[in-house]
Image 1: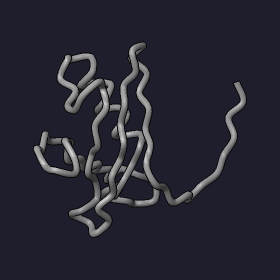
Image 2: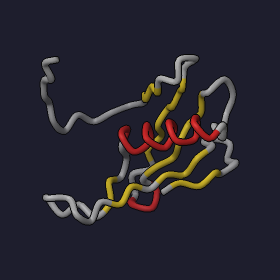
Image 3: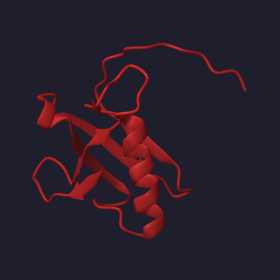
Length: 95
């Protein structure tokens, strides 16, 4: 879920609830995948906040994490996610 928020530090407030998660995490405090899906949806609707397809989303402040996710949708419609991270898993994907 998300809401537009005209704050000095971010344009969107995001929350990602996942009560059916196998490890019983009721809410993900800061997640790139949720922000990427929201950005893709907003791009398709022509409702991206910010300028030139770039904005910052706030996520996790209600849980005491207050993360900032940098989001950019490029000219080809590709969504790019950035920001400071704390790695919790590592994996490899072979195509």
